[in-house]
Length: 629
Image (cartoon, rainbow, N blue to C red):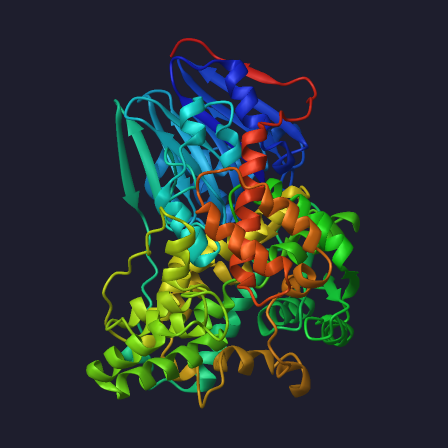
């Protein structure tokens, strides 16, 4: 796990390359290296996980190929053995060298052989072509800048602080801004800056002779396989178990200590239970809360005791939570509103202090196996809305739109939300709107540049449509961002065992009846968990990884929030509407706490980004300068 940065820009120099790469020093505190040749710069910050020797140093140069690589290729030993049979030799024990030798033999198609997570740049010195690759699910981040003549890339947005012009650094994307205030994160291929984009998951970019091409090399298509309808539950369980054992064991490949984030949920419990049985004794980590409705630690402790893990837990209180909130913009790099980022950062620090360098989480299980409670709720609401017909929905929408939302400001309450939902005749547009915590009217009033995110038309199995949307949007742009940034802030590596492409493809094809049955979510996955845990530990209430931010805002942080929001200086908000919202909050009247939190997160990022704080001084850099071709 590492941080990478670089450019193809004749006007940029080694000082620029170092400055860009040093911005992500937390992602790689163990080593650093730089390659610069004829306007092509490649930088690397290393977190040593596999092959801790100098043989794993990056950027790595093999013949005419140069690589800077963030991630892990878990099946690199198998690929190496295949390459050796074909005549290739190796000078190191690292997966990085395997990638280069695989690229030399198979070209960009080599990524189709990789089981892993990765964001990497490969420079072919002979063809003068640069490739940027991102893994299938988007576990690892990769941003890029392209103006038609110059390209720059980096693991995080902060890499571009030294590279961009003043006007480029201040140009906020209205589309990204709208996505953030709609969903709490920035989705699709956008970033908060107009001139920076993300390489999409399962894609690679190729820059050659001034032309930037985009290629997709894999796709997860959520569509129930009709041929599986006749398969028995036992047969599917056996296949799922075999895939899970293989995928989870792969994520233990490392030359450093590995731990597991354990909540009381099905996904992390299954990861911990399978590894305890098939890999050996593991170390588990849990965060608890003083608020009982949020606290999963007692149940997680019972699971840890049953599987015999070395278990560490700690309680996160409001004071500790606010210290994390003070660093939120630095940790998450862009505006990010998922409150579970607070406990994720806390438990990452807990694992780091216990000596872990790699941690596994259960992300992806909900999207693949029908785990979100909202899936059943939204299906019910969609069915109800269809029963009243088009005319009935028009009448109800007009009535709801005129209500004031049970005492809230016009357009901000639950009635306005109902009015929004009743507009939609297409299911995925309905589902997407259900994911927005505020009404469109409220957001448009507060944020003049707000544009309601569009949704493509949809047809087919409704659960598959929701799962596809979450896999394409919510998973890579919220959940995976949360884990990547929180772990890397503490210089440890986060891994997601469920996001092995074999498990993804299995879950995408699985018929709905094996995901949700009689209102029970994650049906087949719970049957698998029952092979490892007693029934009472398989049916614990689902809490998610929530944090009591609403209570903290209301009871502990009011002064801090008023100070922050009262100092808003950007032109993003309608000042009068924002002050009215603050007045309601200050007076203790009902407010939209979700929106208040997003405003706080945006403003914290805005102030942090514009402060242009310099990175801390670093040790002497090891720079690789190669001239000529």
